[in-house]
Length: 327
Image (cartoon, rainbow, N blue to C red; front, side, top):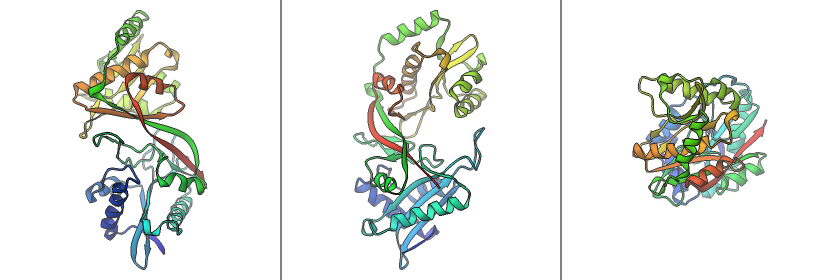
């Protein structure tokens, strides 16, 4: 057995192995094409791919990566290396092949100075996966390690700890029904001086305070970039005294019919007033307007926001673990 770096001649073997694992129900990823592999892995500058072979015959691979762009406060030194995917054909499992690939991955990034290795939704390579029990509906990013796949126990045995459990949730928008209390809550917010609904960027409302208090540079970046566009996508926001105190969006529809958004946020100074419930239901309405067929999201299993999603009609679809190892 030999572990080496990826060669272009490995591509057909990777596609075959990947699709064998998909067909067997071992992983939830969408079926792989050469074009999709090149788009996701080879065009991203931070990817490293390791291949396992026996007497020149391919039988497994691992793809790892690291960030190449950073939000404020992030550096090469304080961000992890990410394990994106590892696959070994059935004939070579339980004989050390997976461990050899993982060791090569760990040693490579240790040499680059990485202190932490992670399997996480923050991985720069976002891999689409199919929601079980749906007509092929996909989510755009695997939010950690699927707890029902072989990789979960494999990584636990090799020192990767579970830091957070995530639940992926799904809503068929044809089944969405807005409850009457949403408009009642909107009216109550307005009486408190909080206007919740579609946001007009011409208002130029301040949002840095909210982003500071929730500690999200990502949402700050999204709001800055989207509101600066000549034709921004719809944003749902709650505005009070010239300040954005809650938001969700931007509203988008992916080619696969999924309603896409970055997340939902309420300023801690304005929590427990029902802002998130109003905005989230508005988001579903906007998804329907742009022709989305379904929506998916993921959240921590201990996150109280899960109650909002369940109340809106989402159902749990799969559980994932964010896993980390210190080197």
